[in-house]
Length: 496
Image (cartoon, rainbow, N blue to C red; front, side, top):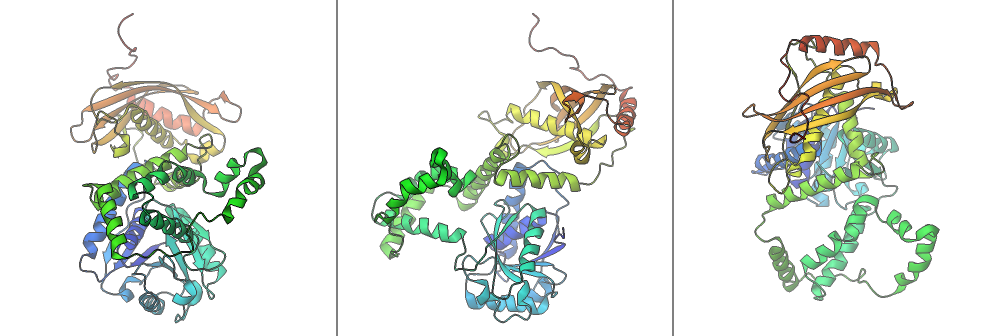
């Protein structure tokens, strides 16, 4: 699969800045051109939010962050780029002019995507010399978290371009969906426009206020849509007879005059004032950046929940996240740790994010287990038990864990973990891990664990491979002279 090697972002607003963040956090260098005098500040704030969100989203090893370079022209921006994303304001003449400039200056093989929300690509590629490589790549805000991009070709766009774009999005954690025909507003915005138009009528007619309308969405069908979309949700509603029964039961109501979808609401000053006033009251004192951070935290939580769906295989956006993490682990640099060092091995560096904090303001208890699990996974990769090893049917399973909580980890605290091998044989691995506060180097928690090497297909314990055992032996011999950590062999609670 061909990956993006360098990207260019033309336009650095909310969408353009978020595209840049998505590329940068995937390790891709980005040239950015935006004549706005505050462009560097705006993009910097978007990138800061993106980095905060990724710290909550995954503990997989991200590649080294790409380099962001602000340049003074479109021509300078596209030099060396093989993916160019245009995100300038939504005006046909402006977008067409910018895309034509990009086309003239860029490598003829570079892909050119437009972030337009509704302009058809045929209109945008009209004056291009190489229109076959131009398409719409319509994302959803925030681009650095929401993984979908609608890929829409114009009359002169080649099918190979769309397939190439789809393939290039996958390594950066995005899902490209190819739309068969170009229409104004594509698919997602067509659906959103229908709900938006009906919502405006409900506010105008004083059926409800903006907060009530949002509550109706977020406490009901919005939750269903987040994990299963529309048609599969309705298939379930049809019971055992499925979609045919649902259509037979609810199809007739489509002819009833319930909605005002074909009537355009008059956004006069009175309605604008009403909506703006209700929206301000609904959000209270929260500013835009506060709302963005809350939005990101919630999206991360939803994606984490979906990642455990379908019996742990992942579902929807959660499965996409799981696949993305697997690719990150697979492409991560191999540890350079000296297996013969006579000290516990430093495995993991992380930070307590908002999704980890409980009602006491501390890292909640199951997150300690997560960090210790990621620490043992890190040790396994060191000894050769990587994704390929697991794919071939062998792994280590944790059969016993004893965690001690010694201190407090609070929101924003930097943490790191170490691991020491206490004993081993051909099937068992006895380890002791410690989580430290990165600022004070004080121990926050410890975990003593027993791991058992298994044949996962036969579901039984078997000896590890010779290569793995040699690496375990090298570490264990280096750790043999270390003082046994305080807490090894501790029982839980008071004396019985």
